[in-house]
Image (cartoon, rainbow, N blue to C red):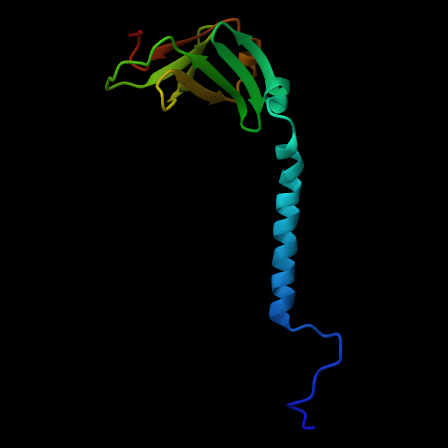
Length: 129
């Protein structure tokens, strides 16, 4: 038997296989870490993160700060203007509009929203409707 046709009996693993195994382990570790959080019962995380609420609005704490959501009675009219959320008179800035146009959402790092007693909206140029 020549050196080229012999079967290797050592434990050395070729480099490409080691690289693929390491990449696979990394993916498994990342997805595994995310797995238990997503396996929690629905609504558990939202309920524990909610810090304030009122009639049609909620404030939840998240990784990016506080997310403020306001449910509207009807979709906003189409206008060349941007809706903003206001918490107890404090302008939180531009709000994202949901696909159905009935929910406005803004994110802020200001901890004052955690104690808000009212959430409203206004146009960025001032006024409502």
